[in-house]
Length: 127
Image 1 (cartoon, helix red, strand yellow):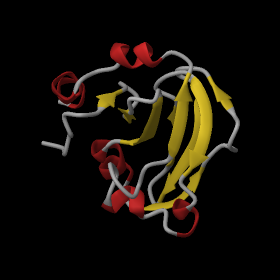
Image 2: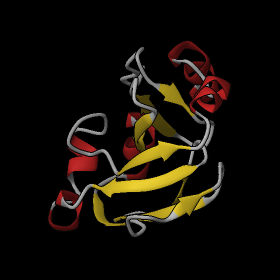
Image 3: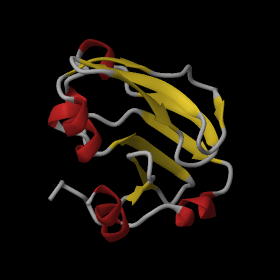
């Protein structure tokens, strides 16, 4: 069973979202996704200020196996990107829910996070 923190919301496209009370959220890829990709060698992220629609590609994660698009689980504006991933993309492998976060978003509608999966439902998706 993959590591699925219960305080996060999950997209079927394998991103996670950690909502804060101030209407911002951290976004990254799940433990399942990083494990499927293998050793991550490069992470491409958007510029701060980029407006994202739910389901829109916001970046690319490249690994020794493949390059995969990463999708915004909800609509919002990029407040911050994890600059540490530029030099250390392997943090996505070693700590997908901590040091490997990718974006901080200001959500257009924080209630939209409720449409995402909880840990138990995401676990069913990944089998």
